[in-house]
Image 1 (cartoon, rainbow, N blue to C red):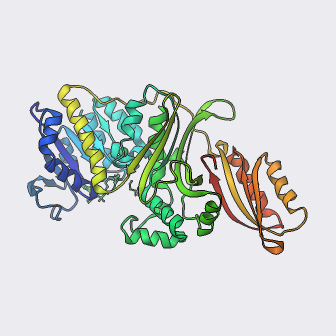
Image 2: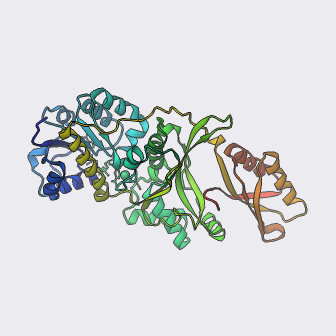
Image 3: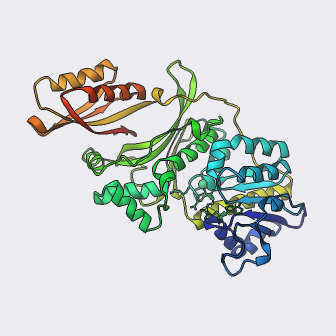
Amino acid sequence: MSSDKVRLALLGCGTVGTEVVRLLHEQSADLTARIGAPLELVGIAVRRPGRQRGSDIDPALFTTDALGLVKRDDVDVVIEVVGGIEPARSWLTEALRAGKSVVTANKALLAEDGATLHDAAAEGGADLYYEAAVAGAIPLLRPLRESLHGDRVTRVTGIVNGTTNFILSSMDATGAGFGEALDEATELGYAEADPTADVEGFDAAAKAAILASLAFHTRVTAADVFREGMTGVTAADMASAKEMGCTIKLLCIAQRGPDSAGTDSVSVRVHPAMIPRSHPLAGVGDAFNAVFVEAEAAGQLMFYGRGAGGTPTASAVLGDIVAAARNRLSGTRAPSESSYAHLPIRPIGESVTRYHISLDVADRQGVLATVAGVFAQHEVSIATVRQSGREDDATLVIVTHGAPDANLAATVEDLRALDIVRSIASVLRVEGGA
Ligand SMILES: NC(=O)c1ccc[n+]([C@@H]2O[C@H](COP(=O)([O-])OP(=O)(O)OC[C@H]3O[C@@H](n4cnc5c(N)ncnc54)[C@H](O)[C@@H]3O)[C@@H](O)[C@H]2O)c1
Ligand SMILES: N[C@@H](CCO)C(=O)O
Ligand code: NA
């Protein structure tokens, strides 16, 4: 590489890419001072070069040949803000194997096949940075990858999807149902035209896999993550949570601990859960993200901020560019992948959870005993029982102690089959001491 400057290739110039270009221009003098050499943008790969993307971008920089740009000899750092698995994976493996540093925001690729990228980085002796891939602007991956490397992380609990947090916060504040809150999120530009990746938890599951891999020094992919979306959360569920002094959040939970055979293992899940209002994550409103990390020596840590949006996400990309550029100038490298622990993934059925179950039952003698018997049969201990209404219109709200998820699921299935249970109004997992 040229020793008097660091040359950048940008792949993609959409929401995040345009902000990366703007910040590179606006902060050029400061970035040069911090790095010790100027950054030079030598090319931008786009699909449609004629599109307007800001008046200060030199049109000569645009190309539709991303692979050709990656392969150029005068490129030191490749920044990928296109997204998706292919062709991004091919571009980035090509760059890394050739010893070029990579900065990417591509959570989908890292979660599905991070191994290929890490292996290519090891092969090429190159840096792979991806702070923007999880919780946008929030510095989270660097703390997990560096600051906490002297400690043992035991649990990561996060709100890592802004769209669904906006929807659930709005349902909590106004009593609206899911559909109405989703419409509001779409109108305000928080939800995409096709909100599936957000509301069905795919986006959060990708982020959970990346967080778990870093936290537990073990390769975890999106396929290892138990995922349940939040489209089934109703206004009645939220009202029920409120009555218990709780709210409902879409959580990603990555946990390390012994499985039923006592083997150290990792469980990673994404699902809606009731949490008490006193929990630090309960107050995270609007489209904000927050991640709560627990480590043996550090104790509890909380990371909070904007997890999406062009400008906040570009902030994380720029931080990674600076780190990669400094490393190139000093001939050093970012910490390489740490996956030595090879911990097994625990299936969801073995994850210990608590449930909140709301049942519509007949208010007759023996009903409570029968219902309690089903819990006992599956070795699920009941923590609290509350009854409201009378005769044909009674509701039982049961909160359990922690039990393996499979036992809880089997309990709910058997309850559904009872004649005395007219309907199961809601089943929600409970987290955080409620
Ligand atoms: N937008 C956010 O808030 C946010 C937050 C965190 C991470 N990310 C991640 O950042 C990445 C980019 O997101 P975005 O919101 O900027 O998306 P975007 O859709 O706005 O931009 C992607 C751009 O890539 C271009 N592109 C597609 N195929 C291409 C090709 N073959 N060659 C060149 N360009 C091509 C598209 O035309 C588009 O302009 C994704 O991986 C996303 O997950 C986005
Ligand atoms: N759709 C994501 C964008 C950031 O990954 C969100 O709502 O948080
Ligand atoms: Na981040």
